[in-house]
Length: 346
Image (cartoon, rainbow, N blue to C red; front, side, top):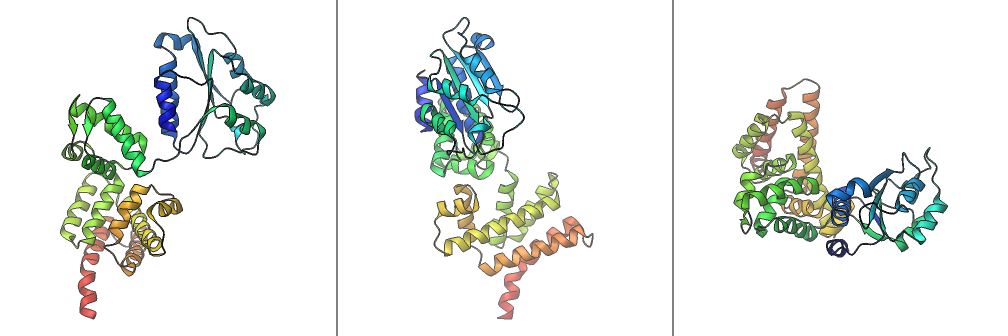
């Protein structure tokens, strides 16, 4: 649906009414900016573009703007932010004339584009005004992208600047930068500039230019633990601490990661698929994919023990019983020695 709407915007086939809502604010903003850019030239925006916030201004003021004939242009664009009356939120101090809104939605001005910018996960479809808006508006639901959609989004952003990108490079980018669109947008812009028109973004370029997100650093560290590469894990830890990563933060990230591994492992064993696990844990499917592969390297008992170890170390550090850095180093060494201890006990 998003691709269809964007395609129509590029062809300047506008709807007089847009309703943008959902859990992915970057996509909402990107859609709104595409409409404004395509509908109005730079010089027209001073005269024919207006933004109203329904948490501060009655909606009828935005409608009056939309009903005003544009100056020095063929159309006017009016953005209506935070139209909370489409949701189940309680009424705020500002009173809105919803009867006037209903009348406008039924008969919008032909020379204006009104964009209802609603950064909410859900709308209240029991309300008459919400039902009417969904019937009359071009609706864009900006929800989190699945892995295939996310990869296509990255590829499209790179190609729009001239270069192309390899599948391996997309893999590395998503592992390093994560799945947050605002972060990926910055990284794709940088990579496209590096490759240049007609060039190809390869995995090596991503590794050189894209810094690892904290979660990716933890993933690498845990992967080294899983392979019993404790010297490598210690080097990674020293590198992270050298870049001013707080030991307390590292403990929290490790605990969160091991909990994720334990949860995805248990859910997979109970028959959940990757998409179901992502939905149940409210985690992006790409992260679940990586976590499933990594969780396979650990037994359930090892994951439980790792979580307990982290809780113990966290308590020791916060109570002042042990130096923060030393506690992390000893923990990694303990994890590396544990398999030998278990074999000797057998």
